[in-house]
Image (cartoon, rainbow, N blue to C red):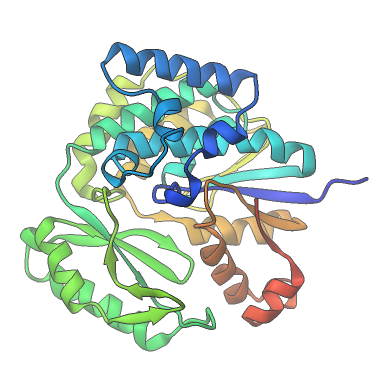
Length: 335
């Protein structure tokens, strides 16, 4: 049987929730990813920290433990990589992309980095980023039908512009373009102001806007010190040409026969740390350049299902114009 052709999307922070407790242990199989996890856990125990296997295998989900920035980043990284090994048996993966933290996972998933070095990248970035004060707010510019709402779009941009005019204390900017959602990031004063002034919207069971727990001001100029430290600490990261196409947070494609490992390293440790991560551009590139059978959203969780769906509707890809048609077409698959 011919495997469906897929572009794979790796999730970012916030995808490991109480419903995913035990995900890593259930998904992991012997091999390079398991070996990388063993190395990670040996290092954690040497630091007097609980192992990821212990955290993932806990009887109860504890937000203070499981949503801690460093723990969450590593749980998501290993959970996604473990699942990718299974997905390759069912799908022919043409290209890999990721949302924010998912970019780090996309590198080993595409063969541009070995799993142990990928863990080092994730752990280093998570430790550096927690030093930066500030946070992220998630808001939306779509309704229950997942169609763009021009009034919400104008209101969100107006709120950002108003805060920018008030100076550095309320600095904020786009952090992630996430389909019909927007992740905004900034200083603590900006986060407080955004939560007050952004339009209040209910989509399905979720109320917007809300602050993302344990998230710093990622993908903004506030993380410039992180980029500088990361460039020095990860200068020897053994990046290589990927084995399949990689789509970065600008929507650019890095091909197996033309990717420059030096460019990948500079983008990973510097550019994407301080500039808006455009996940919507990743999805557009996936549809336009690769024409896969499915857009495959990896776990843990299903956090990318809606943003990818928003992009499909906005593009009118394969003639899909509404939410019902999207689900009927089966173009967006949650692994």
